[in-house]
Image 1 (tube, each protein chain N blue to C red):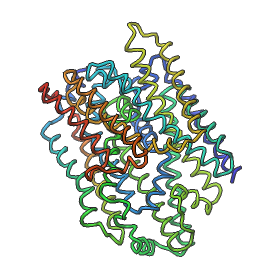
Image 2 (image 1 turned 60 degrees about the vertical axis):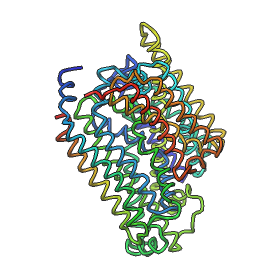
Image 3 (image 1 turned 180 degrees about the vertical axis):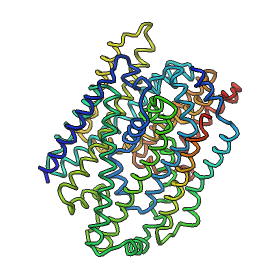
Image 4 (image 1 turned 90 degrees about the vertical axis):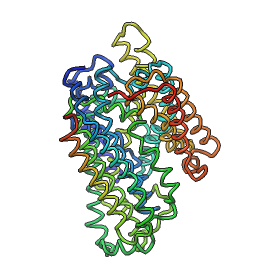
Amino acid sequence: MITTFIVLLIIYITVGTIIAIISRRFGVKTSAEYFVAGYRLGGFLASMTYAATTYSAFMMIGLVGYAYATGVGALGFELAYLLSTITLLAILAPRVWLMARKRGWVSPSEMISDLYDSKILGMIIAVLYLIALVPYISAQMIGVGSIFEGIGVGYVVGIIVAAILTFMWIAIAGIWSVASTDTYQGLWMILAALTYITWLSLYLLPTAHLDLDKVSEILGRTGMLGITKFWSLPTFIAFTLPWLFFAITNPQVVQRLYMPKSEKSLKRLIQYFAIYGFIYTIIVVFVGLLARALSESGFIPMITNRDLVTPALLLLAHPLLASFIYVSIVAAAVSTANSIILSVASSFVRDFYERRVRVINHRTSLLISLCIVTSLVVVASLVAYFRPGFIVELSVLSSVILLPLAPITITGWIFEKASNVKIEALSSLLVGFIMALSAAVIYGPKRAFITTWVGLPISAWVLITSTAILAAGLIRSKLSPSK
Amino acid sequence: MSSEHKDAIKGVPMRRLKYFIMVSLIMIVMHYLVPYTILLNATNFALFAYWVLLVLFWIVVTSIIVERWWFK
């Protein structure tokens, strides 16, 4: 198993690095080219980098486990994200794409800063990204380390491999190498998922003397096909609400809306991503449900730690198949981590350097980018190495911490110039952020996520409060939407 | 901004956009409402199929809208 895994890993790294090196031919001289591909990404590349960035190691480990432990509600949770995202993209992406070109946006924090005509807002958002997303990057590295540990290669080796790959595939050609390796990794991920479900359905189920009717009967009997106790309505809302707005609060995906080279490419981004997300989500949830049926039928033992469902299933697979799927999880983690790091770096380069100097030295910009990327990779790796328990929990809360960005981002996009409400935008952001962070400190990040106040999860209160503050500002200033 | 881009922004029929937003909100409400009322205690793949078909339908609708109507 170890040998097969290492061989496949070497193939994955070698092919990825060759792709990254080839992507250098697109040329990177300015920060716009380094971070947003000079606004000339093709539709397929744009959609695949969007998908690979969005779908992290959580899918094959976390979501499979949720489906196994909590039933079909896990599908509703993940599909709520997809439903909302394609809606938001269809409505807002064309406007954002046009404005990004017109105003030369490179980073999402710079975008807010420009929309509200407030430099301080951009700088605060850059710091906010750092606080919310470093735990998330570390969680990806912990995921890779855990896979290496489980296979017997060693946790630290996993962290080192993840760190080197993350850094290397950014450093080679910025977003060009990230997007092209994301495409490659996205294909690896979906192929592995398809192979996984095919093996489960055509080999493992018949071996266990099960078919779909029996699976339905077993899962139906145990209540896994309805709404289980876990997915009470407040919990379902708590899980889904931050994800409904993920497409407009997370910098790594917002930034990807600037990049398509044409309207046609933007359309392809939305369409291909929707198809990819739909197939990937269904497969992953179905794997979890089938695994549960296998446990209920006594073919495999009940798995108490839901993060171990995929590793437990893969113990039954041929080493080549298991390694193929494990490498796809490494790919999911790396493609998410490097996209976030590049996006956070772009915020610091734009808001702390380029927008503060009269003449931009592009060499200096790229040097600063490289320093920030290096620092972020080192910090995330160190955090992953020490594996403090609260980091994984905090990564769960990152979407809630970023939630106050939703009202100010949507308002900015609709009004195009909202400098009249910059004070309210700043207050809305800070109050929402403080609420989310205070809840994390008081309850602990994991509990804060599902704790309710007056029947509503904290994420809903964060959103309501931030929106109310901004709405008050809009009423005061009597802004009218830009047509 | 190029004239093509300006036309693209102006070309978005606001009335249709309002309808699209209204239907989108209905879809999102349906995503929550039906499972927590009608399909709460499903004992077969009905809830699974409901969510899958709802999102598939919306992907098809959105793709057609994005392809044919958006920017025109």
